[in-house]
Length: 290
Ligand SMILES: Cc1ncc(C[n+]2csc(CCOP(=O)(O)OP(=O)(O)O)c2C)c(N)n1
Ligand code: SF4
Ligand SMILES: [Mg+2]
Image (cartoon, rainbow, N blue to C red):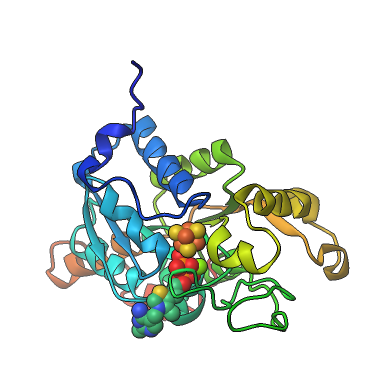
């Protein structure tokens, strides 16, 4: 019998997962492990960090060192881990609420520093774990537990925010584009810098049920009908983009990475590294890096 190559990474004694039938989280966990497996990254050199939310349960099913942190603080914990152990691959699993609401400050500043951590944000369009309240990425008009007459706020584009803040790599896919998602994860894992991958994912239990999309298939069709590629979206007006879901790579660029710069600073302070010719200049320049 053919055994899936990712099976060796799973804590089988913890299965089955708590994910509801039709939830996209299994696809995202599978895609992440496939990317790790294809790149042959030593699992002992990986740390997974998660926030509070349904997505926060992913690392618990994987044979890897992990930290299930407090709500909104996964990126802050990941920053500490990476600074203390720069040789580790630090992967964060977070939710749209975890990153886009309570944890948004950490998200912006980690992207600004361009610290080498990989953030996989499961955007299931609501606060799922707590019963389906609206989040910053809930589409306008959608019904949730806390928007019983339709959400009056607009969809917050976390990818555009990551680009503006200074991330090295930013992409958005839905769980429909599994191969693109795996390739993006591989790119991110190979890249030195802050990488943000948003995965738009079905939550039939809380989001779908209240929006006449009780099955995962209906939610995936809803995504499919609205998808537009980044390159096709370029040049379109706000009006033309209304109601569309932009998918693809938003940015892939080389920028100075924070742990590298930090390492140099430590060596300079310990007099183990030649001081820059113009000491301090790098720190006082009003530098626009991107
Ligand atoms: C400090 C704090 N505030 C609020 C909560 C309650 N809480 C737990 S998960 C969650 C929202 C999760 O939404 P999201 O990040 O989108 O994750 P999902 O469950 O949708 O994957 C909230 C508000 C908490 N655990 N801690
Ligand atoms: S509540 Fe939604 S996101 Fe959470 S496990 Fe169920 S389907 Fe998935
Ligand atoms: Mg969510």
